[in-house]
Image (cartoon, rainbow, N blue to C red):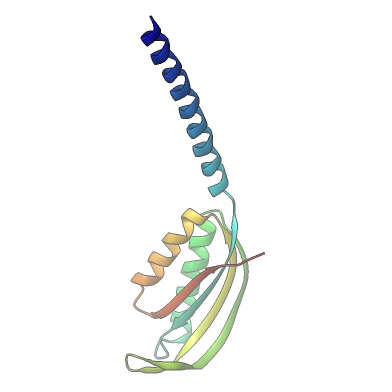
Length: 129
């Protein structure tokens, strides 16, 4: 009988521990749903026409809108000299975007930019408040 009670006690503590873990798991899920501020800097190849560069930026804007994000400001810094050559290029067209988005959706924007041949480099950072 004492063994049964010991097993029952450990089973009860195991249930309490599993409930605690479950509560922590749901807390983490709720925490990840939080919308964050992001800043995206994109460098587009200099031989790409301005209309084509605008199309790339419009695709990113559409992605943000499709994933229920809020688009902030979009600035074009124009052609600037690169700090070091990237391939055969010594300059690039710079664009800066600010938007709010859920963290799990930010990866898809980066994947889209990686696959685009007109984009030389991009940097997506989470802005601190």
